[in-house]
Length: 258
Length: 70
Image 1 (cartoon, rainbow over the protein chains, first blue to last red):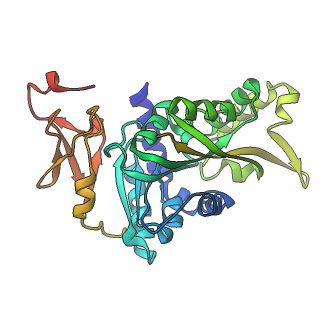
Image 2: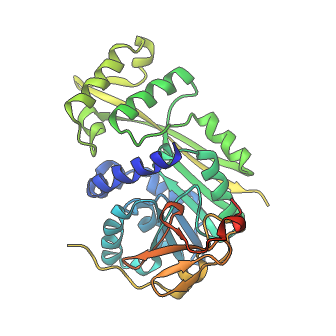
C-alpha cells in the first residue's frame, strides 16, 4: 500500500513535472507571501522545503535565509528545480535532495524552519510526516504547512477527496483543519497560526495541470450526480455563469516544543 | 534542455543521514554512492543528487538484517 502510493506519486509527478512548474495555481498565490511574512526568517536560517516539487517555496525563501534544502521523492522534478536554481541569484543557497517526507534523510534538530506547501494531500501517513518534521526541527523551530483542506465536516471531506482522487489517483487525503491541529499536537508542536481561505477555480483550471481522459471526467460526473445537493453546493459553485470548483486551503504554522 | 547538475557540496554531504535507521547515523561517501555504517544500505548518487530512498538502496552485507533498526 505504502510502496504503491510512493510509486503512484512518483509516476504522477514525473509525468506532470513541467506542468506543475508552469502552473499559475502552484507558482503564484498569496501563501508564498505568507511564508515571508509569518515565519521568523533570518540570514542564518537553515530551511527544509519538504516535498518541494519545482521549488516554488524554496526559491521564495532563499533570498532571506542561509540555506534551503528541497526534499522531493520525484527525480522528475530535478530538472525543474535545477533550472530555477540556475536562473535565481540565490540559487547557490538551494539544493535538491531526493528523499521521502516519511523518512527524512537528515539527523535530528538540523533545521530552523520546515515548510511543506501544497503537497501533504499526497502523503500516505501525514502523522509520520509531521513527526519527521518535528524531529528534524531544532527545539523552538517553526513548521509551516500549506495544503488543501475542507470544512470540519466528514461528509464534505469525503466528497472532496473522492473528487480529487478521481482527478488524480496520487491524491491520498486532504485533511480537515481539526485533523491538522491534532497531528501537530501528536507531533509535540504547538499551533501558533491557523489561516484558512477559499478560492474558486474555473472547472478546467482545477483539472489542470492534470490532463483528463474521458473516463476520468465521467467518474467525476458520476460522483457529482450522486452527491447530496447540500454537499455539492459547498464544492461546485457557479460564477459568471460557469462551473467552478471551490477549493479550501489551510496555512498552519507550528512551533516545536522544547 | 536540462540544466546540468551541480556538484555536491561538502556541507550537504556532511548533513546527510540514513533515512531508515532510527538514530539516523551519518552516511559515508564512497565514489558515487553513500553507505550507512549501521544497516549497510548503499544509496546511489544519480546525476549528482543522492537518492536517499529505502526502496532505491541496496543492502551489501548479508548480515545486515540483524543490524536493522526498523
